[in-house]
Length: 284
Image 1 (cartoon, rainbow, N blue to C red):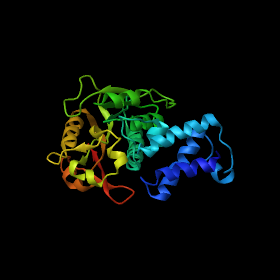
Image 2: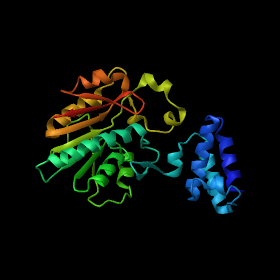
Image 3: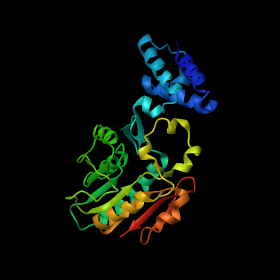
């Protein structure tokens, strides 16, 4: 089969799950990524013949995609802040909003580093998941010591296996339940960032099956009866761990922005790329 034929076949198999344009986009990304060819090759050289071994690889990927498995899981990675981040079942796939959280917090981090009189500049990523935020900060700020924590064994295994090339030290990753007290021995942090679970159970109906059926519920959902449980806990962690003059950055549920901000003294709400109240910053 040719490059074009593989893309056409995968796109057709995905149309029961996705709109035709999205199905074709996924097919193109799957084929070009798995074959390690440029994105444009399906247009410039559509009749390129794919050998049998690579054709089998594409057939196996197509079968997984047709079951609704996210493309990022099939590929085994996604891109975040210019970094290739490993993902797989058991870890949340980073969203564009979380990348915007990183961009906003990184800009603030640059300011904090310029103003800091402390040689031990430290950053903490609470609910680190794949470690995408922790590794992004470690890559951009090699002179900082970055920490990341999560309660999930599966997520921490993936985070520890990231193969991001860094100029400085790798993030220090540890297991912790943010709903409990912080582990003893942690330093004070100049910057704390977190994208905790915040989707209410009642919002399940608004979500796509490929998210509900594949991504970890533990990283997504909170009960409607207590949707701010993680933010109250993070407020307690930050109260004890954030340095004077430091910053706390959070991704939040847009429908609960006012209620979430009310948990923090002097919190400012910031909108995301879609104009939704998606982030909170607290400067101590």
